[in-house]
Image (tube, rainbow, N blue to C red; front, side):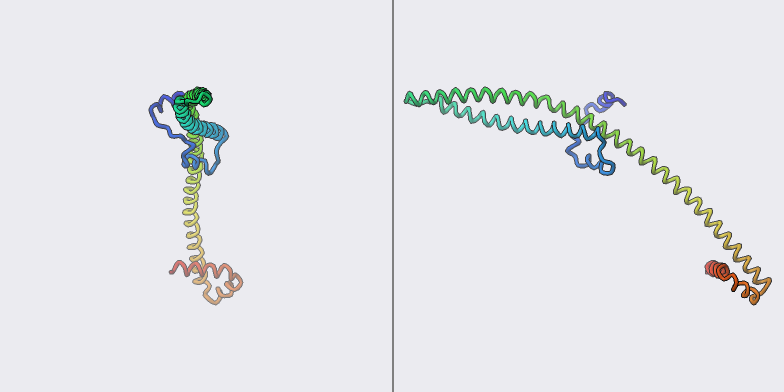
Length: 213
């Protein structure tokens, strides 16, 4: 689905800011973040930092403006002294100039703050698409490996059952053959041959004892 189709399908949905969610970072704990995700994460983080900085700056500028307004009120009262009156007038003009500059800066910052949320939303949306592509690719890869392992386990179980049956059949044949040899030749003669073939004789006897338990 193209990005514009996702935008249409997700219209009205609340998409959280990804980079401030620790669970988002944990999505990449095993494989690490791909380059395209890192690039947009950095861009989004910088935009959020800029937004915070501008909000703080506007707050401080408004506080400064309040102080300047207070200075104007104080200096408008003037004094009876001509010299002090001229000084108050200079302070008044300076405060007015600073207020104008402060207003311009506040307006500039607020204009930028109006645009920033749209930019942040756009970058965050793009980062979400890259994140979902990464996650679904990882899920798909993991599912493929899971199926392969499941098939291997199934085949191992089948082979195990077959080999258990083969083992049991061979043990039965060995026990019967050894028993027939005893019946035909007798214990004395078998002891002579068992001494010469001690490894197999002990093995057959051990299997016979287990079967009788």
